[in-house]
Length: 163
Image (tube, rainbow, N blue to C red):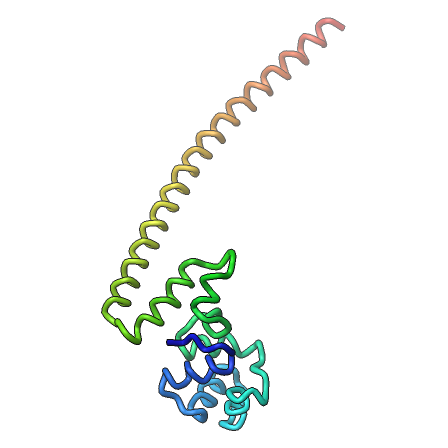
């Protein structure tokens, strides 16, 4: 359960969940970021003596296998935020469920992925239909444009005859 209240608590929780020592986490960060992070730096992040730099958040999320939202917020916080990605909320919930009910969490994750796949297929079909409608409209526009050009020429000829 990752309902820790501060980012430093969640930082420590996720590091321990991954079974990483502070030194190992420092090495992984160094690998990704290209700058050294010793165990003292990691310890300072976890104890709050030093703030976790914002530029590390994506790398930490990658190492911990979580979303960046999960590093900042509890599952309850994520669910209460407005305009949040509902898939992100579901992922956070499934991750928390993994501790006590791994089979159920896996099943719910697969169901969510299947639902997302169906939604994507529906959107692709909508896009295909819109493309077809757009092609028809472009043909109609060309027909109208051609007719307008012919009418313009006819009006031009009439005006010349009348002069």
